[in-house]
Image 1 (cartoon, rainbow, N blue to C red):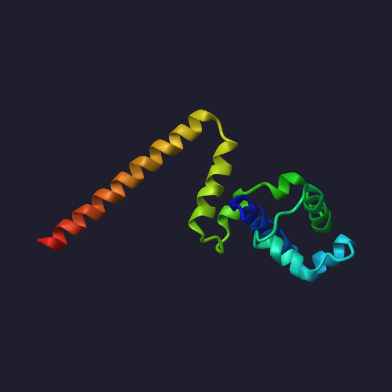
Image 2 (cartoon, one colour):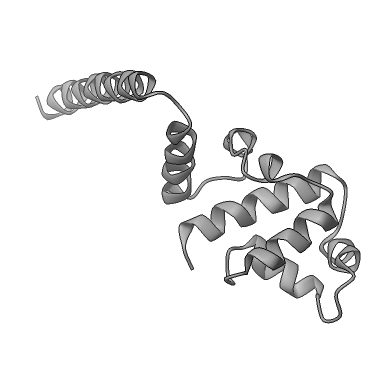
Amino acid sequence: MSDFLKLVGEQLKKIRDSKGLTQAQVAERTGKEGFSKSRVSDIERGQTNISLKTLETLMKALDISPNELFNFEDLYMAQDIEDKKLMVDLHKYMLMERDLDEVKYVVRTTKDFLETVDAKTADRNNKKNK
């Protein structure tokens, strides 16, 4: 599935955990026949494409607003986010909310940082090879 589905799924899981709810409790709170724990699990893992109606149902079950769901800054701080692509997408969504000058600053700073890291790595490799 798409990285966006994974990102939304991670966010739903983080919110559910912060509210102390199990997947079964969320499924029950939807009030929908056939909305099961395994469906919540699939959604949280980004394994199933969902409609906006289903997303709205989950938001109501978790008692959250769209702003809470799509505020990925808190997700960035979560320790369980390790997938490189997911982290890059998370940064992308955070940067899309910023002014162009701020994005340019972040890009320049990142470029400078990576050049510094690469130079240090090259120095270490040169010292090892001598």
